[in-house]
Image 1 (cartoon, rainbow, N blue to C red):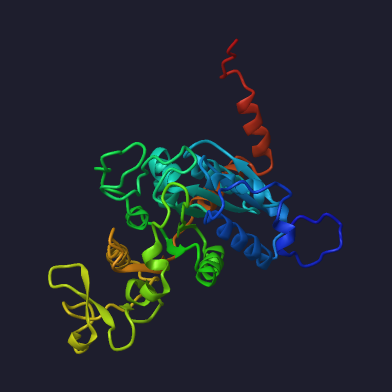
Image 2 (image 1 turned 60 degrees about the vertical axis):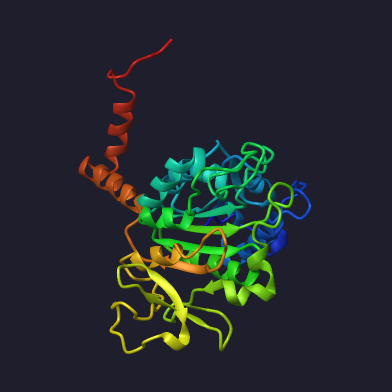
Length: 355
């Protein structure tokens, strides 16, 4: 559904999606890069600004709705997925985005996040991961590394961190991706793919916090290191890492899981799926096992960090099914008269008045 305001239509630009609010993030924050990319991406949709909504929780990333000239809601800590679920279910004409951080989404909001994912609601979740609490001044977060010294862990964190993508895949996510905020071409490609996806799309975005966790991703941002460390996932292609002549190829281990081996040692005669066989990336595979195994390649030493789209499969969406149930119930109640009956029920005698 489109909103016809009776005004001449013209192509929208980045400027149309830029609000008049002063952007208040620390100098050098990766959020600026993400904001600029999203503002440049939105005009491509050809969707009126009135049909785009950004819902955020609490945190540095959650200031996002103020800076985008669309509808938006700066909501409750960790509860953005729940609020966005209600909005997407009641308003199928809207493009709904959730903007959240690793603390907001994975700590107090962890329950809401996994249920939005398992329900497969029509919304896109942008999860800014800087591995720290930024807004509250530098406490460790659910993605902080073991041993990380912060204001709340002066002797080093002893918590095992979440891998957000493994968590999402375990919750049966239908679209899972990871990008770095500094890789604008990939970020734009993933945003486009997420927009085309029906259901919940989770995009983890590695984002530097220059004040409380500066340099967390320097190893994979260093151009001299990227070929050896970044695993760029391409659908239909072998999963590889490294420069020509030093390339490693992902193969299946004998007792499950995957590992990188030198290309010269690869046995390409091994039957697909057998131990030693090469892993060819297929994000559309209904079985999430390969995507999960690839998500586990990442580690604190950042030896091999996969980026790109891990999974992209089709499954009925929560909001579509709920609306179908409501329509079916109304039809069974007599079509249009069902609205009157529902109103009568809500206003009937079987209610309580609380003084």
